[in-house]
Image (tube, rainbow, N blue to C red; front, side, top):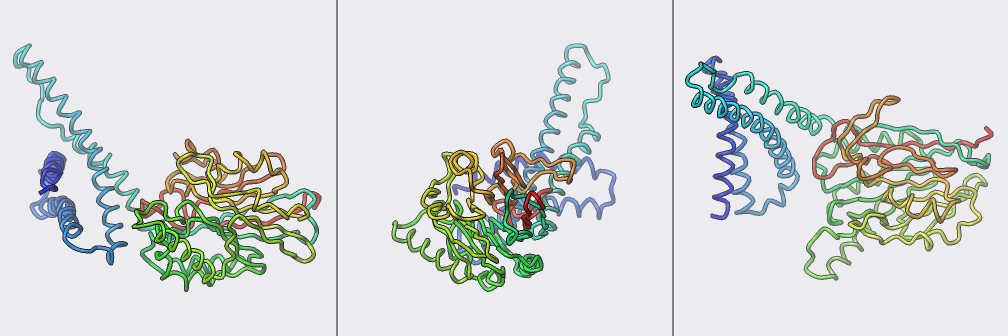
Length: 409
């Protein structure tokens, strides 16, 4: 019964928006009109069916399908909201004209619903509906390789051309397919990386989400190793656990998952690598954000300890706000910081050499791509997976390839 009132409101909302389609299809053939009406009313029917399934049965086994359907329905109702806005403007026009007629007498002003406004409303609603639906169908696994050549002053000759591949924000709990991910791993290996960095958010909520994908991601290979860190989603902070022990066990499983993948998980620690005689420090911190709403598990001082003599210092830190907050102020000899977290909001516009924009830029100063302050660099990966909205519009999933060179060469 608690769903009855919301369903009635939803029906009235749909009924009001339906007026535009009735007017739009008024001169269509009977078949075309009935087909349009059937498609229109199938959306609220699906909402009701999903609501009943969610209320009366365990949908966990259908979680991925449920998430996709939920996203489609959300997009549909956001589009309808735009349509309803246009219809309300048209009704306000009709109301004002009726009032004017009442005061001035019948002056012959047209007061019926405007076909033009109905057409405009449907067109306006169709733009985000088609765009977001396309982003789900086409772009979820449309991996794009971003390449950058980074100049490091006084880079030893032994490290000239060092090739680093970065991925971030896998969010395995959002995946619904495996074969596209396999192709993504093949794209990574085709770059023949010397090092691979994963910069956090392996899962959405719980470590178990990654179990069925271990056999896929363990195929990532790098000449000198695959190194990883944790992101804000990896700690189980967004789950209501029955007790703290359950939460701790979840994190233990996450650590074991990194081991099963063959990745060297860095929890506020570092690794010193000898690469053809050049000393490379790979430093990894747990999640650390300058924003109050995200966790601060990271301890960069502890992670940095012992790397002073390295020729090249590379930091893995999930949240890019950490860079300006601490790295460039207190650790000026860290050459490159690798981050993720933002996903580029999975929505924006990117035309190389012309424009790079996303609403996330109003939240994060550094949100995608390469940034530099003095001799220090930050690279923010746009994410390998997706979260919330199961798609991408304009900001595609990323595989980063950074090649290092010395300033004098």
